[in-house]
Length: 629
Image (cartoon, rainbow, N blue to C red; front, side):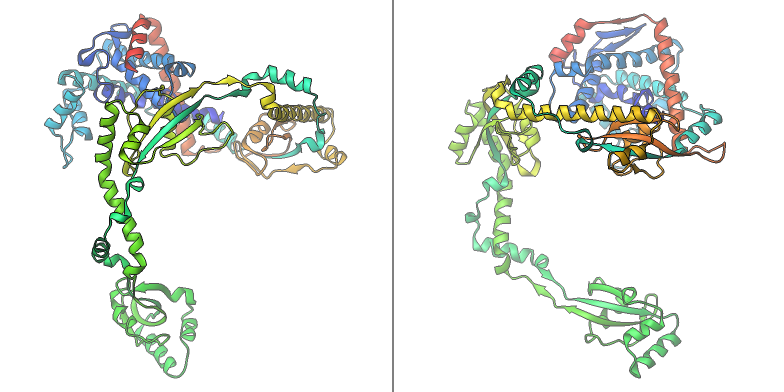
């Protein structure tokens, strides 16, 4: 239940809070890939309110981008379909259009003054002083291929939608009795006793013969496919590839050293210990004790201080408080000072460690300087080199040819799959911009040219696909060892599950977990007090949720922390709040309230849609996605 409440925020409330973005989709989204800036054709219509191609494409592309970030690679339209992106996007924009139609029918709108304030407060239209700049506004609207009047209308629609959604979230929607019940529910604690069942208790499966393995292989052949491999030629133009240390003269090195001499100089540092006294009398008493032979440590003890309390650490003169700088840098090692007028009162200091000032010599750093200068010079050449390579590619040259002509090294990767593995299973972990490079390589046909991958200050990377080895079914002999390992893993899991079911049946008939553990010559473990969705060592969250799924006599079987184990769980103890009324935490109350607001908004949309005529244009949607994605 609590998990359901927490998931509310990912539903309609969160979407509707982003409604203002829909109004600005046309401003920041797709630049008229289908219909330009004057599109009146709709992919769907709710009553008299239409959903433009632009709105649908922008929402679709946003969903695909989020999905691709999760997947770590570019996805095809068909792959997006598998995840329901097209249908979910259509449902989403139709729901928003439903609200727009309701707003239109009810003649809900913002005043010109309020709308003007919203636009003026948009930082995208403000100058460096934070004030609205009309020229900036006009340029932004023009770049989006929109008329100013159309943009203002879209902002009005988005703002009224947002107002409508906020109306459902205003005030306290859930009664105290619900919040109290929810709090009591979340405050309950339980201890669990459990038995970890592994092959040590269930036994090992009998070794399979070849016919069993082949039968298993045929039934699971899809798991043993060879992945698609691609042969790549990679050209990385990075400062480290272009750096020429031999071109750096001794004079260049010496000049750079002098320019940055301060960075090679380390000032003298001294470790200061200080005692701050409450009064001048106390300070003078301490000085008298020192002249009579007392130690600095004795004075510390009398002031109820430890060495660590007095130690200010190693500091240069500039790092010290001004009041003690001169005294600290004139003292002899381990000799207390006179009383100083410190920032916090009468102060006594001593120096216990001195690190002399040091200047790193040119001889010590000249190799590093030469390398750094070479890299800096190479970085300046990157853009020129990138333009030169692009010109050669435009002329039909491939990466391997370009590398030879320019005298730089390209890299040949004979075979790599989408996970950066070779056919032997080794991971190629030293590719430049590896994630982007592989994603591009697996969306490029043989002979096609893609834009270079920009890796920031590190330069550019190009990739050519020379050969594609498609996925194929492996034969049994190629994967016999893996098939056997998988078969054994499955059979072990079956035996463990069978043993767990057997022991659960005995518990249901009255046996105790402790007695069973003793019989099996093992021990039953017990957790501490746990609330829902928490963990305790080997007792993971899933086990906890299973343990809370019933009453005090509840028994459950759940997967353990490792693949080859199951947990047999019983409830050892339940502790509930003593008070009948337990105040719900503010955060949980907010989640519950937002969940109720989501339900109300969903019901409103469903009821409105029941009364509106809704049409869709699947042909136009397909055309838009084919040409615009």
